[in-house]
Length: 321
Image (tube, rainbow, N blue to C red; front, top):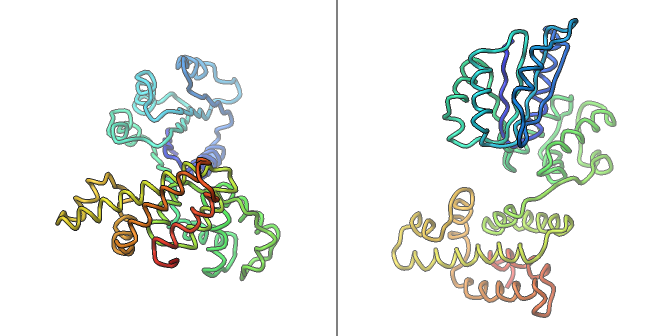
């Protein structure tokens, strides 16, 4: 096996499983000693070198794991990474663990050296649209035959928390026989461990996914999210959409109108859908409701901000008069 592995990205479960598999294969190859270093401020890289020079008398094959908790490693760290790739220490297998790397890092000399001599494993966040496939494969791995309802049920319960999803599926494998799974089988067995990002509320609002909007809002409320922050986010969406509609009436192309409204990335696609789905005649009332929502969330107006938040998507997309 190769003597260097570089794991980078934000999806923790992917990195955990990759590291577990590497260690398992290394143990089969005779690596019986393991050191783990966490790189923090004032970390002395000489400690790693000294440890390599003091191998156990009875364990000459060693795994060295180094966790670097920054996407911008120091000059000393970069030098060590490049050296480990180009001049590996004898009888040593390196596993480097880093966060998501930006373009400057992936185009660096040290990253290129690691790519040439070792295995580089990216662990990007598994997005909501990828989750059904991820869960489906996991269930199949444990011998379960599932349908779409079962997969969606697990997605709702475990969204945003893949480690918990993994644990829930492993629990199902212990509690239930292999074969066909039904939602009824899961109701009592699976905990609700979903975690939601406030940005998902914004996306559901713009896309007009009313069921998801309600589910995410309920989850955020239960997690202790503050109404003023969500109020600000939805208001930002409405104001941006208002600017897009105004620009389009003035003949500005949609792409330029979105750029002028400072809308890009995943939000751009959702805003495009909102532009086509929301009646422009509702914008004035939506802006008024945003002002009311803002005041309610700050305790400056009568009414429950959470109830107002709950009705925003339905009104915007014409499901509520």
